[in-house]
Length: 237
Ligand SMILES: *Cc1c(COP(=O)(O)O)cnc(C)c1O
Image (cartoon, rainbow, N blue to C red):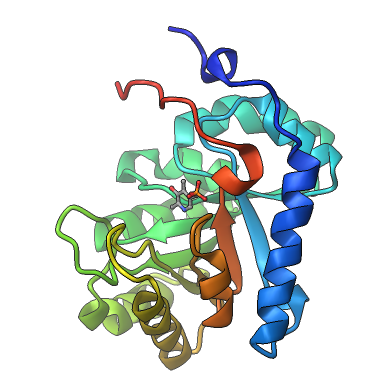
C-alpha cells in the first residue's frame, strides 16, 4: 500500500497558512469581545504525512489533531521525541478496544461518546497512570450515523463520566451536520458546557471556525485551511 505521504501534493506554505488562520481567529475573538488567547487552534493533520506536521512544528505550532489511532501512532512518537512540548488531540471515533493505545498516545481525547468507551478509558487511565483530558462528544444534530451523546442525555452522560468513572472531563465537542447552518449547533454546545461547568468547548472547522469563535469556542479544529486539501484516506482494514 502506498503511504499517504507519497501521494500528497507539493508542500503548501504551512507557516503562512497557520499565520493566516491565527489572524482570523484573533479577529473573530476580538469582534466577540473575547481575548485571542482564549482560543486554541488544533491543527488537524489527518491523512497528511509527517512532513506537513513537521512544517507546522518548525513554524512554532504545537497543538495537533488526528482522527485515527493507528495513523497517529505511526506519525507522532518520532515527532514528539523532537518536540516534547507538543499536544496531541484525538478528534475521531475511538473503539473501546483501542483505549489503551489512545490513553498512551494522546493528551486530549475529544471523542468520548458512550458509556462503554468511557469505562474502557477509565480502566486504562488507572492501569497506565496517565490521564489525558477528555471531551464528551455531543451529537448536536441528532444524526443517526454520527457519534456523540444526544443533547438531551448530555448532562447525565457528562456526570457519569466525571463523577461515577472519575474521568478528567474538561469540556465538550461537536461536529454539526454538514448540510446545516452550524451556528445553532455551536450555541447548543456552548450551553451544554456552561450548564455542566466545563471550560473547554471544541467546535468549528475550516469552513466555520470564525462562527465558532463568535459563539464561544475555546478550541477550533482546522485541517484543510492549514495543511491543504487531503489526499484520499487509506482504505480501512
Ligand atoms: C477532519 C476533521 C476536522 C478538520 O476538518 P477541515 O474541514 O479540514 O478543517 C475537524 N474535526 C474533526 C473531528 C475532523 O475529523
